[in-house]
Image (cartoon, rainbow over the protein chains, first blue to last red):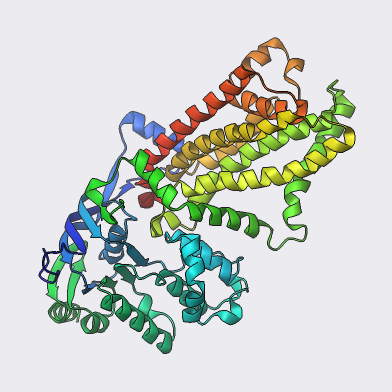
Amino acid sequence: MSETAHSGRLAAITIEDLAVRFRVPHERYASLKEFAIRWVQGRLTYVDFWALREVGFEVGWGEIFGVVGPNGAGKTTLLKAIAGVLHPTRGRVVVRGERAPLLELGAGFHPELTGRENVYLYGTLLGNTRRELQARFESIVDFAEMWEFIDAPLRTYSTGMTTRLAFAVATSRLAPVLLVDEVLAVGDVRFQDRCRARMDEFRRDGACIVVVSHDPALVAGLCQRALWLEAGGVRALGPSAEVVGQYVAASG
Amino acid sequence: MNATGVYDSARRPPAFIEEFQALLRYRDLIAQLVLRNVKARYKRSILGIAWTMVNPLLTMLVLTLVFSAIFRFPTRQYALYVLSGLLAWNFFAQTTVAAMGDLIWSGGLVGRIFLPKSAFAVSAVGTGVVNLLLALVPYAIIALVVGGPITPALMLLPVAMLCLAGFALGVGLALSTAAIYFQDVMPTYEIILMAWLYLTPIIYPIDLVPQSVQAVLRWNPMTYLVGLFRTVVYDGRMPSVTALAGALGISSAVLLAGWWIFSRRAREFAYHV
């Protein structure tokens, strides 16, 4: 039970002894034939890459939880395990509520389709029904400020516009568990402010938010608690100011 | 995730069932993927959706010229015979290739967001059904013009299409499982498809080939599935109970096998794309 969890209620996210292993063939078996020969000969060898090992923590409801660490520390892998994209190799991930994953924003957008068509395509990719998207369509386009271009093909959009639309779709439903991967770094200052405002909305609603970022200042300012990941393992876990301070000092 | 909205990686239902539940929850995604496939394919072409109809017609024209003029098959309305077979074959070939391609080339979608992996194969089948229905329009027009049979047997067309779809989905799922791990599967399959086409009575009638070859054709499931399709579309006859039961049996057995192979591995896909 996390110290920040509401009393009598289980934590929003429970991670127990989580390990994620990517198994890469030692030599690259590009062809089935080569693989078959090696397999018969019993000479298949793998390199195990543990992207995460023995990671455990809990995140309570209404909490903003930060994850910091250098490139390749396993931050995105952790988010993907929480999002259900990667099934744990060992250990356990429990998420007690619907998830809104803000990672890989806009994955699945199709450049030839219009903004409107992409709202429905991307929205259903994130698990919404068509009816839900129809009901929320106006507010999505309002938030993205996209009325002028909504019927133009996506390939004519700027990167910023594409991200705005993706963010608007991904946050159109107030899910109790929000997973955020570096999205705040995109868009202009005004849009970043509105992203933060929307995340506050989620939190006031009692949502649990996990933020992954390279930016120590952002994590220290936004989050109550934080986790410092290094080479797939936990280096520190605790109040965000402390953890971020240690992280900055160590990488200084 | 279960009904209470809790995701527990240690208590996921058996993959065979979980994949199906996820697919049901994401059913609107299937429709959107079909729409995307149909729209995106023709968005920048002048003929647009008409390509779906023109393509088999041109193939039919070529084959008719070659085979009825040069080889002189004594088949009644050879053009319709070829076209009906080609429509069923193209549906199968395009669907299975697309099931593989969409999963692998979905921009690594499988490794980036959570979604039921079978959505790609299922939407490939859906796209194939749309294309087949469109291609049946010019077929019907030609049949009307040359006096091909339009009979109540056509009521069984959905059943014939269902058998083809189930078979294609099963094969597509099994193939895409292999294709995730080995890049060779796709090009190899394209070659197999070519041989398979000639080993299926599409451009020739089955009773025109030697007994020994006929014996081989009887081991080919597509012989029965194309046969059923053609019985209702081209012959305009009610299929025999045996033919119907056989096609349904082949189709559901392959579908179940494909689903089992696919769902057993689906959780690993994100590690390999």
